[in-house]
Length: 334
Image 1 (tube, rainbow, N blue to C red):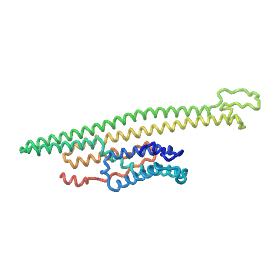
Image 2 (cartoon, one colour):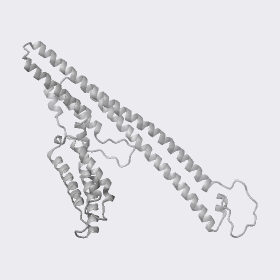
Image 3 (cartoon, helix red, strand yellow):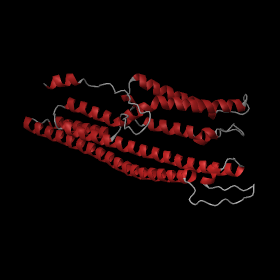
């Protein structure tokens, strides 16, 4: 569906759905990207959840496109459609987003390298069948070359992914240092302003001077000495409170940005370590099922949500189900 035909249906007259343009565009882009992923790797129950969310979005978009100002109460109908669009998009995204990470893993560079190697393996085996090679030694040599090529390609893809995670971690770490410096500077400035606004005593003792009743000195010392809360004193106090509040809000904002950058750096370094650990463990065994199991565990460790200690209310997701039984693999290798 064309986005403009949804924002302004042809029979809508003076009515429109500009207020949910972002939701409709986000839903279209989300499901367009989802179609490029390998949905067949999901269990049937999860595919049903994804399909239900997509059908609810498609239904409300169809209703919006067919909106007619002459049918029923257009104001009430438009309001209901807007609320339903937002509610359906929020529910559909919440039910589908947890599976997108796993779908992207199957479509990542590592999975693409595995598919490419399997295609090369099939091509070589077909070539061997066509040539009807009788020499067992020649066949073994070709197989060893194929295995070496597969391992080199998988190792290169994993190393590239680890380097990319390291680059992202370095960028986030530099940004975290910058935000830490901003936080410290803002905190120091806030303390100084608070001191000079409320806690600094009068620097020079002034002799008592008769003043008109409509004048009040606005120094911090005089504010404490004054027993009457005049409008001038109240305005001065409110302006100081506003300035100090703004400065401490800036401190909290800079601190949150620092924590977010440190979280990203920690998570990306954790992912880098997962890829490097996979490379190290892969060299320790020649059994292919065991290597596949190690790869799945490394990928799950890299892309599953991680706690860094820098964000509030961090939770760990349930670990994914084991696709291969480690005890069975070990028993088979023995």
